[in-house]
Length: 274
Image (tube, rainbow, N blue to C red):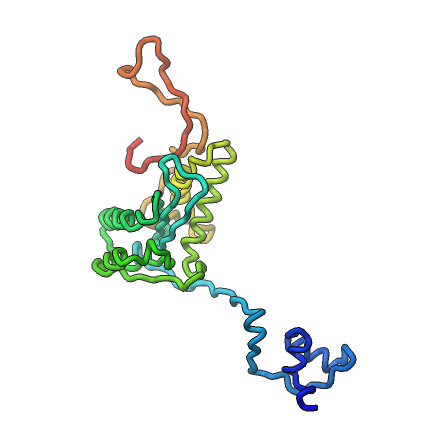
């Protein structure tokens, strides 16, 4: 009789029903044949429920943020893409400064190029800002955990932070940034009917523009201003995918040749003054 009156037994008989519902069914006599149950197994862990109903609890919002540029760099690799870019790339490496949220994008044909591009990135930003990268946060992708990558970070005093397996939420800064870049790129490609092979140009242009936009309505400074301590100019911005006419210098044409070429605008080059 005691076995028949066990809440754990009825919990299993009724398809592993929740204990709160079982308690209500018993106390209010909602069905016939269910005895009055006095104990509902507080603290008892049901193995069947763990196997069949296990789920993740919500991730707490991070309360920490970098206090200076290059204190934490968030990195992630997107790809492979279904369509190769014009340069043959199928991957995009995204590196984000945790303090300013300034974003750098690099395009790869193979995952193995990630290490070489990170070394180039390190030399570029450390030389420009006169600061050192202190911490690098990435997932456990093979491109980030190779012995070559780990030895390089150890040699240069860069602390590694790796997320738990299958837990991209722990590197949410990079995940959200890739989504932001992708959505901006798709808006341009589809609005102007640009071939998908221009996705790398679209992503690069998206990063250029987003870096010059305010982070939020609360923090009205742009990543550009947060990182470089000066307000960015947007006067020169043009619509990605729009028609443009480029002047042909006199030395490159004859008297009857056209003075301009009709082209399509696909982004900005931060290495050039124009």
